[in-house]
Length: 84
Image (tube, rainbow, N blue to C red; front, side, top):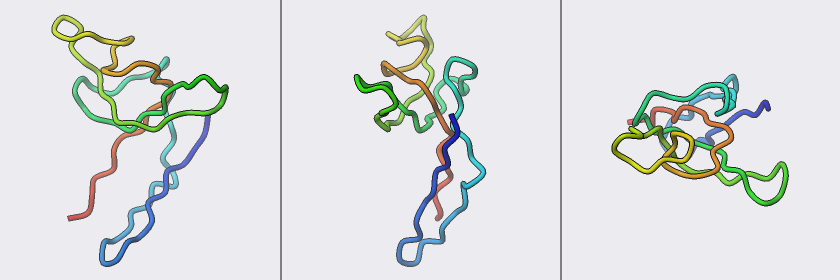
């Protein structure tokens, strides 16, 4: 799956370009533990996803869903650094 994430410039906040960013298949690669990322969650409709924030948890300390803190993660992308 290829998708790009775009952030729109708002007031005095500078925009940042993520046009080269690609969604990563969660079955092929996962982020570091406890690093929050933007995720696409599977829904009941094929090809339709919910957007959420998620992270990998320590399975020995937390209830997990295939390693994630939330159920149904199919794709993820790193959270962009917000402008200061």
